Image (cartoon, rainbow, N blue to C red):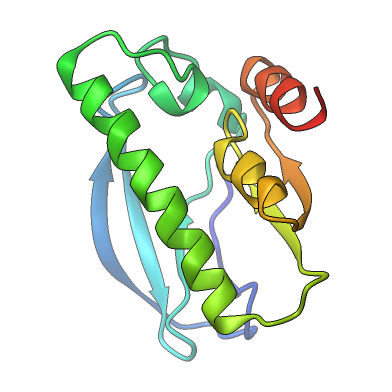
Length: 141
């Protein structure tokens, strides 16, 4: 694991812990979210090595898009509405017709697909090979 000593946004060197998070799905490890005192950027610290292992679960719906329970179905419906909301927000603040979107950690590509459907140029990065394959099919198919 890599400890964050310098803010990747402003090069600040002072942080405070803003949140403790537990991964209930795969590793059951606890992580700290640290906030840069200077610019308020939040980052997981330490940054885990091999990030893809934290998403290797059939229950991680962002990498499978498969509803297995009522909660999963509710999540998929909510995602539909939040994707529309995100597009409205982007259009509200960015009037440029040739807008490019980079989605780092794009999962199965739902956000990228929605952006592409709205005329944005898209690029996604996804460390999980399984989710990346689905995203590639969805956005280049």
